[in-house]
Length: 136
Image 1 (cartoon, helix red, strand yellow):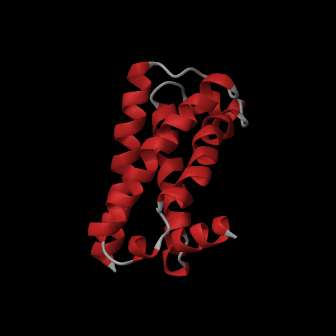
Image 2 (cartoon, one colour):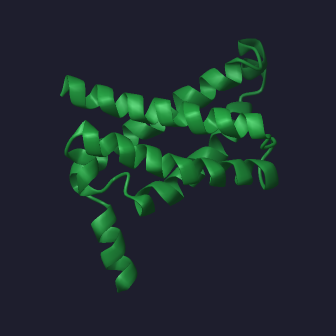
């Protein structure tokens, strides 16, 4: 029962549009990052490569973001509340994603990559949410 009330406080229907936008922001970020290290030809020849890049971070986001509050009532109110909720959610999600990448999926978790993921994810998630409120 306590879990139900905890999650019900963390999930708000008004924040539902952010689920799609956040996933798209992360996919765009991960795709651009991958293209910095490989070619379009390689990706076309290896269609399962990108899903393998996405998986650890999208799984981690899906597990962490609702718990931290990325989709709580505050996320749907203003950019001033939504952007920090996304960033606060991304930091532990990125750490979990890096751990999944290092131990479950293909890839490593070098310190420089971890820093890039923390910063880039924060910029992409926060940036798209700020843009959403500016255009709304």
